[in-house]
Length: 194
Ligand code: AMP
Image (cartoon, rainbow, N blue to C red):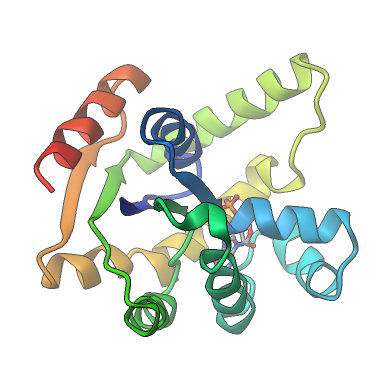
């Protein structure tokens, strides 16, 4: 099964992706996680991406498209994958179409988590507090000011990605403000129909 999870930062894509991984035995491909790892390892991509990420802006299409294309070729993706945080621009969505066609693969579903953006800022503050309480490092871009920049980037560049898939008859929209278990159930319901 090959899925895309869409929605603004803080919408719960990562949480839902992890549940789908556990349930369907497929892998989560989070470009954000991959980029953070590249930053940690100080790879050439990480060095390029760090300042952009810390500021809450988007890394170039070219970089993330290259990362995803290579990652999909790994053996653990053979059973399927969930794209979390990619595509984030129409150019990325178009590139993904080309990549999948070239590799002879098909998307099964695109699920959009719809959320109230006002409440997202509160959620993100909570996420930072919980992470800190667990003694884990808080993501620099979970700072409320940077988070607002991430939301702006979403509204400017990424909000158009859902309509891209809607026009192709592939989009299922779900209320992402419901409790986590209900959102998981709604996603399962969508997946039963594909
Ligand atoms: P995320 O964990 O998905 O919120 O991503 C964290 C940061 O990584 C974003 O704010 C961007 O700077 C960068 N990033 C992740 N995925 C992408 C993408 N598909 N396109 C551009 N930048 C990305």
